[in-house]
Amino acid sequence: MPRVMKSLSGTDLANMFPSANLNKGQEKMIYIESKSFDPHFNLAMEQFVFDDMDRSEGYFLLWQNANTIVVGKNQNTIAEINQDFVEKNHVNVVRRLSGGGAVYHDMGNLNFTVIVSKQNNMGDFDFTRFCLLVVGALKRLGVRAEVNGRNDITIDGKKFSGNSQYMKQGRIMHHGCILYDSDLSKVAQSLKVSKDKIASKGIKSVASRVTNIVDCLPKKLPLQVFKDALVEELMAKEKNVKHHEFTTEELAAIEKIKRERYDTWEWNYGKSPKYDIVKERYIDGCGKFEIHMNVKNGVIENIDIFGDYFGNGDKADIIKILLGAKVNQESVSQALSKVDIEKYFHNMTKETFVDIIVK
Image: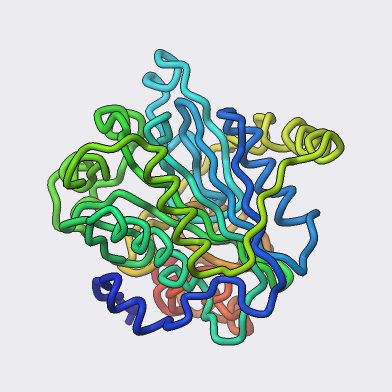
């Protein structure tokens, strides 16, 4: 059975993580605020900091994107976005490194990123530790927030922040988008949200599920005040925070990553071959799964896996293993017999994954 996380308040989280230290054992936490509103640049910036900056230090980034849909690493972009809305409203579309679902960004939205080395007491996809920063910042402004589900932060049951993570070589990149004063009508119009996902939340629509922080404050405050509260919360928990401005050389390296990955159709949309069979299922605690297959004489000739799931492994490993398998319980189970399916699809059992393919 998938694990279901209860709602956690700021007090609950403080008890779970009494030190609330994101960067234990590292010398400094480096604070960087992007001056760009270009989503292609900002995602390249994240990758540069994660891959190329000093690994002995932790990093906290703040950034905003203008009029953008950011899709998860494993998603089928065309299936997730409202293409007519995107074209008419000149919305940027860009894919991130981490899994999870698609999100809409505008200038009423604030994004944060924490990059640290994985600590021994961290589980895989340990969202609560990092969400505590946002919960604490809101407490400073008189708002009680909670961590809900697998990766959401809510106020009075309504989501204002979705979070995702990417892990590689002992490093974690946790990032979250925060609805501070976004145009919620565009959030609803820009994305195609599956009926299964809406039903799993016990709600009638996307609009009824989300809220802006500004509408929950005791009095209306500009976004900068919330930014300041986040940085104050960071500095209260990390005693050695240093501000960093990118050098000319670092900016050039970020631009190179942007050109070679985040500006490209291949990365943001990818190849979309035609498949004979498409199977969809929403698994509570795991997310949405889409299995696309070409099957000839009962044998898998081509297969791809899309969804808003999380996982540390590369789905290409699973695809390679399944090619040539017969579409039945015995053959697919045998092909996957030596695979740790949880590595690729967090909170998924092998039996459930096989069931999605063969039924």
